Length: 623
Image: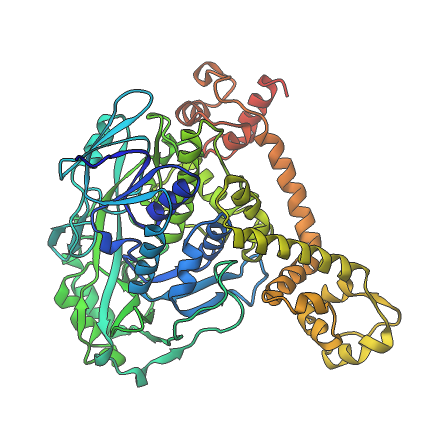
């Protein structure tokens, strides 16, 4: 009896994009298959086993709010947690977790294997055919032919992956893992445009060879913050990280190896990330700096393997090792493997709709590094959107998109399909116009209603969300109506070096003072007893405090977002033949013709399209 390989959705690649895509499609009732070359490497953390960081942490919370897996899996595998940017406003607060690499992968695999409607198949897709308007045929190296109505490609760095250490080159998608040699050609023949990118990873260090007494210890936090809105605790032991610096001797050795660096001898021609440079790039870019910070981070609770953050390199092995031994804490260092660079194929994201469906091949979706991005979090955000939309397409329903004022995921996808990429795309808070609306604390308020509507939210999430939404609303209302008399509040204000009051003052007004915290006032005077008994009371109180402290900024951004939405409501795709509109600049005609924007708002964000060009289109649209 032959295996039945007929599905609604097939996802190629089980990295962070593929896991979220497959889970979302299956949760929405689609018969889904996740194809991976190695089931033991599901959700593998190819580089640092860390999730989150500036802007990336917000994306993870958004994925979680939409019913995705990354937040819960991260909480289950966290070995050090921090909320970054606490010294800045809440729009900048970003959660970050160092994770146990092995436990993260195992936890993700366990959840996928127990997802209804989801089958996992270990194999490699060699060729994709669009047979007719209804289905694709996928041919594997093991000789299987699989059929699906929609296909999602999430193959990460594996498409013609080529690794570099000095002048040594090895084919592979990751260290000791083969590359995918056939899929790019299959997609090129179908009309997709591919280019090459590169990224890199640092040396891995044996903890037994490190002199930790010569390093500075870096500890995490243990408060209520987590990534998932449904997680109740972080159960793994919390571990330490350490910091140190390079020095002039280290730099001199590294410079000696530059002629053999594939980044500088012409061996690598592809584009790499500016914001996460290799150590050799730092030396060339900042020649006057005598030191660069390094962070030594654990890979798990049951291993001596450490990750040397800040030392990405593709220099020859002997140069890497010689330079490391000039760092006092690493003078006796033993390494597990050197740092290396990797080149891989990606596809032009401007040839995608906002649903991440190809404009060229209907029913084909792309998500993750194949779209020119980098980062586990950016991949996961794209993956869940692609999975949702593949499921909706199979069901004959309208696509799902997120606007720039709704989610960092919306900013990410809009940037990709509107502007394209000239380097690996990484999310920063500065890319979002509406940062105060897109905070990490309110991702569930923004996005969980979508998860409920789409059927992605499990019962415990729905129940918890509705309770929190109700409690938050009551807390905000009480804070705005509760008056505290001077004789009650003034001793507390004096103790906080805050100006005393002469008349009864609303709690909401007091909370707007930067030196006062809503939780401290609540604890001091026994306010909101019902909310304080809730298991997530700290989360609710923090969310309310942010809303109260920044209500003026929040209101202003909402007004700006509403103005932007007016341009987004003017649909122009198919309405104009841009090459014939001579009132537009030549560059605008070329860019508009190539991207064919859906709305006037999207057109306004295309590089090379000026405000005067938008005015021309606005007049011609009759609005």
